[in-house]
Image 1 (cartoon, rainbow, N blue to C red):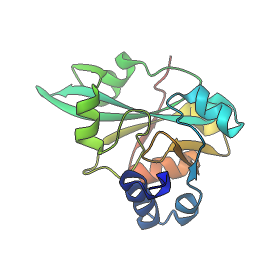
Image 2: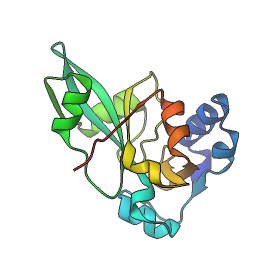
Image 3: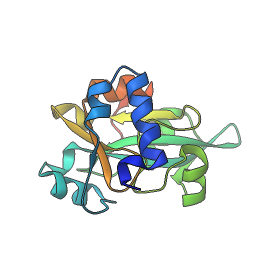
Image 4: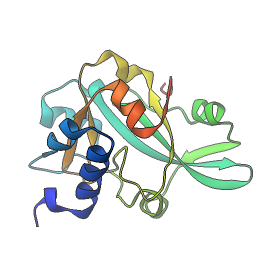
Length: 166
């Protein structure tokens, strides 16, 4: 099975198409090797690291419950968990473990896409991504990416634009 036929990638392509983003769905690229970091993805694509949208799943504590929080963070910096907590009104935000990520996204760390999850996830989109004409995001597998824009990422995810980085 090629990576393009991978169930998570197919789910992302379908979610993109359903959202009216056929160009992004058609633009899914399968890279020769896994790109689990923004630096690896930027190198493989020949773009600035800041144009990579890291899809980071965090475990946020809201009203005493652990809920997923997706931060689409520019690869040029790190997500600030204190800022994330303040932005969503959480008492704590911490990096999620692989099981929590898979449970809430159906995808694995290193390939988490902004869409294609079993249920909607509260999402913050880093305003640092706004400066790039084309942003690259993971497409459900560590070898897959798709091109998009800042405005489309916000619209696709139903997310909120925010300064999330340090």
